[in-house]
Image (tube, rainbow, N blue to C red; front, side, top):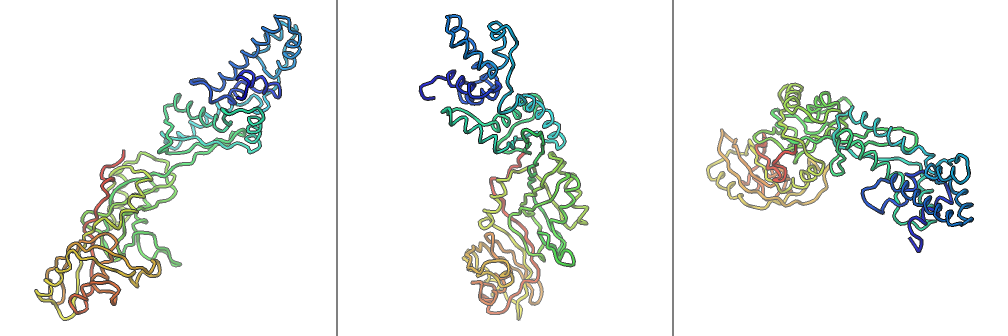
Length: 437
């Protein structure tokens, strides 16, 4: 603080403008530990008054005059000495930053904020503060004018003090890593709102019927297909949320069933009023609302960062499919042996024509781990196919007119077509194998 000590800087500020204890202390917030700005400001003012008293007692008439001029800006801590020296009551000047209302504001914000958070069942929160730009700029100009380096803004103080008080008095927890909500406080008008964080629920879903899409598919006449997302809408009624977002580890075609292991999924519920859901109840309402076509198993709560893992790992996590395949001209045992030669090959797939409207036209490299087929009747065979994620199985079978190599059609030398497709197993990301409570 240049060549003037802390007390000298505090006096320099008070000579320029009246400040309450809290606003003065805020300009020295980074100095000392375990004190509030209220305590810092009060301590500085008391030392200043003691300094004036010492000089006056030693006959410094200039100090007497100076004290008379600055006492109103110091406030109540100067009132006793002022009465002794001047025989009258001190006229305290209002704080030039908060008008002396900051203490009351913080107290009211604590009480009202807790009540508001309680309405949403929040236990982990953070505080956000809106402050007029003019006030923030005034604070900054004072700090620059007096060469102060260890100050904080009124926004920072309100954020900290409101959070600490709610935490200590009401048992809620300030959590910067994974808050359930943000309490937004506007200074000085007392307007307040709660921004509810999404609730993430981790689990799996099974799609036991065909012609069911994963995402809601709107058309002019309504949904094109019934969807997993629509089945999950019933959760909103139970949790009081605004909307549902489905984050799945890949997706199956509309006409494919999802069986076996189920598909790993994270259900994001936006702005729920219930944050500790009965997972069994949610499973039941989804089953009932879908008529049993969609089944979910909800395993625990997740975090937003888990969604990224689901999205990033889709291409490397293995999948197992069951396919009912028709081969022109029928199949022989030799044909089945030819198909098993595909075990372990790398498949190069140019984006299938059927999805070009929504996918880039590129060539993807995917691993085909295993193919095992058995005859059914006539031209029909049933195949179990294990692949890396992201391989288009229908095109692996029909070849997509040469856009997928190799393919069943290419190996057999005759047209092969997938009549039915079921997903039997989706490998889960190992980091997500244990539910978050």
